[in-house]
Structure formats: C-alpha cells, structure tokens
Figure 1 (tube, rainbow, N blue to C red):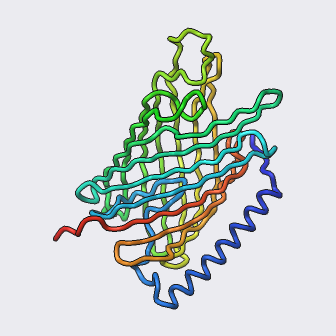
Figure 2: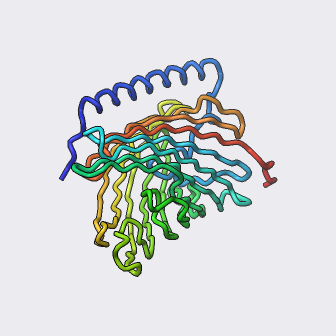
Figure 3: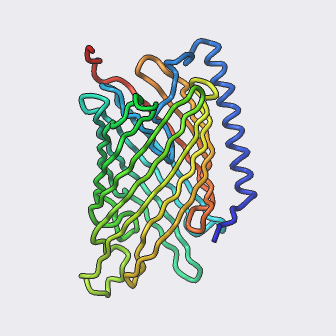
Length: 307
C-alpha cells in the first residue's frame, strides 16, 4: 500500500527547495567568477545525505557533520519528529582506515487515534564506526569502503529513543565518478539481539526478540559546478519492531530525496559544505515528508606524510 503525499505541503517544499537551489547556484557562480572555490580544489566528496559515499577521509583530515531532519505525517499529528545527528570522522594513520562516531538527538511526537499522545526527547543510540578503504578507484574506477558499527544503547528505551541493547551494523557503499556525474550504491544489515523495549512489562521478563533490519539505496549526483552539485537519492529500509505483546512487525520505508550540496568555502584541506533535500515518503511506513538540512566542516589536523 502506498502513501499519498500531502500535495500542498509537497508543492511548498519543492518550491522552497527549487528556490534554494537557484539561489545557491547563483552564489556558486559568483564565487567562481570572483576566484573563490573555483577549479578542482573546490570539488565535493563524501557529503551525501541518506547514503554513504565510499571515500574515506584523507590522511590527517577530520570532518565534522551536522544533520537536522524534521519530518511530518499527512495528518500533521501522528509520527512528527525532529532529529539532530552529529558525526565526526577521523582517518586512522591513512585513508585506508577510518574511525567515526554518530550521536543522535531525537524529538518524537506520536498520536494514535483514540490513544494518548506520546512524546520523547533525548539522546538516541550512539554508533561507533570503522570503515576500510577496500577499493580506491584503481579497479574500473570503483571505490568501496565497507563499514562495521557497534550500536551502543545510549537512548532511553522507555521513551522510545533506543532499543536498550547493544547492536551491530554493516554497510557496503560503492561509488564511481564520471566526468560530470557520480553514482553511489549502498547495501546494509542491522542486528540487535535480545531486545525487550516496547514489550508490555506485565509479560515475563525473559521475553525478548532479535531485531533485524536491511537497507538498499542508490543515488546520482550531477556536478553542475565544481562546488555545486544536484543530488537525487532513493533509499529502501526494512525494519523489525516489537508490539506490546512481543510479536514482531516488519516495516518498510521507501524515500525519494532530491536535493543539492554547495561548498561556499574551500582552501587547501579546509572546506565548508552546506546542503538541503526534501525526502518524500512513498511507502505506508515512511514519513510523508521530511526536510534534510546538512552542514559539514573538514580541516587538517596533522601534516601530510611524505610519499
């Protein structure tokens, strides 16, 4: 069953996105004409929104990533949320190895028909991530950086902000760049064993379930200018959730997300990137509409090693 988006809201969001793209493209062009951010040094990499790109951080360069993601349902009440996610990425001695952590701050509001409203806010479950640069573009132009993550139960499961158990996640991003295009593919698996959050506490405390999730995605990015890119991402997510009676329910979210990213400042290894997108839910379990606001800052913390 497919959700029918709220077309007045979607039209407004599309209008704002188009206006932002046109304005940012104008600023990008003015910057190039003024000699700021022009040329290959202003190229943008590893700044996708819903997907991972397969480029690890260069040796000695750290990246700080900030995401703001409000989402709304058609009725304006059920399932509204506002998420803030911070990620910091560090190369480990070289580009081949990368460590990062992801810390979400969540605010959720739900109202089911005939039931009291639910509101939860606070830290979500934290991720500790390791990525290995398995391919570096030398084999058919493809890049690959498999990721393994440990999910720490830092979110309050009573408020619906976490699962209360340690989990594990793997993801395989593949990337390939052409002259004016880039394509990115993702496939991943999440496993959280022994979850009891969400189950009626009146049941036996021994009741727990292993929850699994899967994700697939792909994106195309067009390099309108070296420092300004148009993006189209799509993501499919299958997740398992628990009902109060301990039964498992599988959810499916499919999102189509047009957007853009712009690097207003690049100098050497220092670069600021900002961007925005409008993820649109095309499945019953996906939010009808979201906004994705992005900002990242990367800079050198260690001198380059002599080759």
